[in-house]
Image (cartoon, rainbow over all chains, first blue to last red; front, side, top):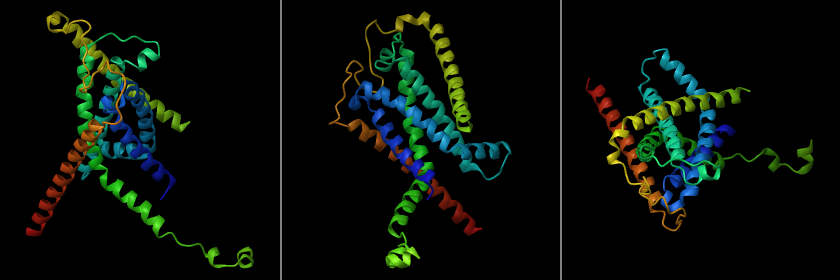
Length: 169
Length: 98
C-alpha cells in the first residue's frame, strides 16, 4: 500500500471524528466547536489535494459525455453539494461566531438569517456525509483490509535466516 | 508550485461560492426588512443546533449528540448501500430472466 493511501485513510478517519465532535457544540463547547471547524476546513483542502487527480479525471470524463458513468456522476454531484454545503457552514458559522471572531477582534452583528442557514446547512451536511461515506465505503473497507492483510502476511526477510557472515557476503 | 496553484483554485472556488451566498443572504435580508415585526427582540439568542449558545463550555462526559450524529450518518449510509444492493440484485435477476 502506498504512503499516500495510508495518509488518505488516516486523514479521512481523523476528519470524520473531528466532524462528529464539531457537529455537537453542546458537548464540545462553542470555542472547540468553532476552532475545530476552522481546522476541519484546512484538512478538507488537504483531502481535496490528495484526491486532485480523481477530481480532474472525473471532470474531464463527464464533460467528454462518457456513457455508463452514473455512479461517478452521482458521486461527483454529491461531492460538489458537500463542498458548497461546507462553504455555507463555514460562512454562516463565521457570521454567528462567538469565539473565533471576537478572538480575532471582529464583532459580528446579530443576524438570524445566518443562524437559520447554519442550522439548515449543518442538518444537510449530515445527510450528505452519510451518502459520502456510503459511496466510499467499499474503498474504505478494502483499504483497511489491505492494511491489515499486509501486516499479517508480511514475508520474513531472507537475511533473518542467514548468519552474520552470509548476510555480509 | 503545482500544489500552491491547486490550493489557490480551491480557495478561489470557495470564495466565489461564499460570495454568492453572502450576496443572496444580504439581498434576502434587505427585502425582508419590512417584515421586521417578525424579528426576535434584541438580546434574545438561540443556538440553531439545539444547544444554548450562551453556554460556552462543553461537557465531554455526555457525548449523546455525537453518538446521535454518528447513528444518523450510519443509518443514511446503510440505507443507501442496501437500496443500491437491492437495485443491483433486481437488475441482475432481470438479466438472468431475459
